[in-house]
Image (cartoon, rainbow, N blue to C red):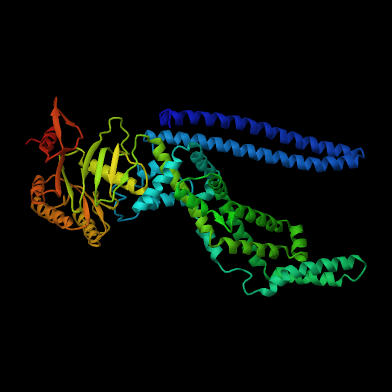
Length: 600
């Protein structure tokens, strides 16, 4: 249970974590000086001991100093990690406060996920500046952001929505776990922002040892024979067997030099990609989940009865041994006596065989948890928002005190509305700037949130899951020689085609057919509403055409009239942004024109 307001809590945590970061920074500087002092002291000590003939003591100091200095480096790195972690947690809480205040400028807008002619994302500000994606997204990895974007672009099934809601409900109160998940990913921001497709392609590429059984045999036999020959030579016998076997290894190593270099480069890149996800995986693996979806996802992190993080650590060990080739002198000995590169390439291909069919699943699981954590963080930050009830009754929609989550004004006006049934149309009339378009977007956005599995900006919401479709911001396109009216007709054609498939659709049509004369607009709008009435569809139409309101009598029970109104008070135009039953009775165009100096 949240004791303080989310904004106050986030502000307190921000200060606390930044103060902790400063303490860690001081500690880091202190240990840095300690490292330097120890290094200088050890070097001087060794020089003096060797100078005065204390070779044993000098050697002991040299060896012990090496290990102590290595321990100091390890300690120093741990402090730096802890410092950065506190910094990231402070930034995370600062950003939570910024979201609550509507300060979204510096958040990624997900523009790369926008699709031309998508059913609704452009009209409903799902991506871009001041968008729903900015409001929801806490994913750090590119895969996590991509998964959240996919959820926002397509409604989930009722079963999947309920599963996400259950998983989100489990994560909502666990603020520490969620924020630490986000902070752990931030440690490897450069790598996690890259998509792992090249790495996944490499995993599916043909193995180096395929069709080279002789090389596999040589990889394990030649080192044994070469070492035996070295022992044979050391016992006073001929050195030719040893030199001959070294020459054979040299020729093999030279023959496959390019392949060995490429293998190392690709495997190192693979490890860097996976290492950036290791902290995330360990964090997810270490928690016990109760919800069915979270448990099923966590189970996908097991490969051959081992945790995914264990497989990554095994990869790290292989890469570390393979990296010995970077030492020129050591490389010559290892690769011409022990077939070093080939042994670890073979081990790496065995790892690759185990993980090639599973690593995509592992990374997608991490992305899924990031997306769920984003929805949970959004719900935690907005405790007044409702978890929508998913209805099985066709096109049931019932909202109490619904408003737009991207309006951050304290005076944000909420409205209530309810309808149900196939072919139902809510017809909204109103004066200019009275709130018709904003209301349509508020309903559409909250539907998108509901079908994503998120909380909604309403006191209560019941909704039947269906595809959302909008035609609200149609504009002319000079490059395509398309007028705004023709652009709108193209959007309406897409709607007609979509509903013809039998797929349930919620439509949102703002100022329908506004680009033509009043007679054609009226006739066309009536024809479209009648056509949609016969389809698996329901939705909203806003218009200035009051005569459309007569369709409430033509299609009783299937067309409902609502309106937004304005009024003049003390010479000023006022709006109450309140949805009322019936046709609009007040229009303000003439008053606005008079205010602009147009004589009527």
